[in-house]
Image (cartoon, rainbow, N blue to C red; front, side, top):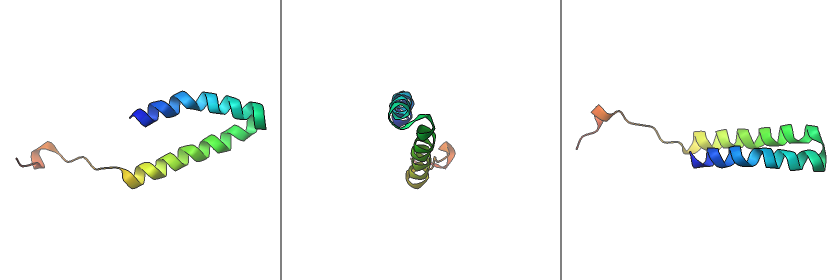
Length: 57
């Protein structure tokens, strides 16, 4: 959850910097690649939730 907040906070700043340095169109593929990388990492390292009634004490 904290990572999503950091990404949402940094994305406009990084996109604005990239637009100034490399042009407006350069930020879309780059930020899209970061988004796809985050999805791949999430799919690889996610944990499954177990229903409460299946947990024994």
